[in-house]
Image (cartoon, rainbow, N blue to C red; front, top):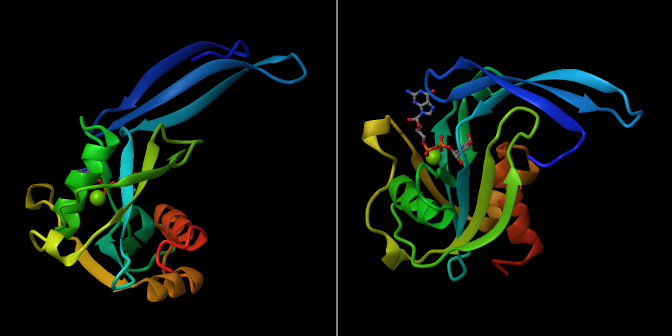
Length: 194
Ligand SMILES: Nc1nc2c(ncn2[C@@H]2O[C@H](COP(=O)(O)OP(=O)(O)O[C@H]3O[C@H](CO)[C@@H](O)[C@H](O)[C@@H]3O)[C@@H](O)[C@H]2O)c(=O)[nH]1
Ligand SMILES: [Mg+2]
C-alpha cells in the first residue's frame, strides 16, 4: 500500500471458514482534507484466470455451463451459468493455472495461450484480480471429456458452439457472466474468428 491519504489500516478476521473474510478499518483523507474512518468487508479468495477457447477453422468457441449458487440467490432462477473455462490460481502462475484448468474443465491440452487483460473482479468487495486469456484449440488437442474434478464436486458441461451463436447469446442476455462477456467482446473487437 502506498497512498498518503490512507492510514491506520486494521484487519479483523470475520471468517476463515473456506476462504477469508476480513473487516478492514482505515482512516481516509477526503478531497476536502478531512480525515474519515471507514470500514469495508473484504473477501479474499486469491486471484483467478479465465480463457476464451476458439477454433479459427471451425469458427467455434468452447464455453462451460455449471451451477453457481450465488447467482441462484440473485435473479438466475436455475442457477446455471454459461462461462469461459476459469479457475483459481492456487499456487500456480496465471498461465500454468489456465492451461491446467482448461484440461480439467473442458478436456483440451493447450500448447499456447495469450494473455489479453488483467482486471479486478469486484473491486468494492473482493481482492481478486482476474487474468484473461485467449487460446486457439484444435480437435487433436482433446485429451479427455473434461467436466471438472470429482474431488471438488465440479460438474461442468462442456459446450462447443459456433462463435456466431455465442455472440447471439451475448446479445440476447443468455450470457450473463461478466468475464465471459469481456472475452467474447474481445473476440469481436479483434476479429479473432473472422
Ligand atoms: N466446499 C466448498 N468448496 C468451494 C467453496 N468455494 C469454492 N469451492 C470449490 O472450489 C472449486 C474452485 O474451482 P475453480 O475452477 O478453481 O474456481 P471457479 O469456482 O471456477 O472460479 C473461477 O470463477 C470465479 C467466478 O465465479 C472466479 O472468482 C475465480 O477467480 C475463477 O475464475 C469449486 O469448484 C468448488 O468445488 C466453498 O465455499 N466451499
Ligand atoms: Mg472453474
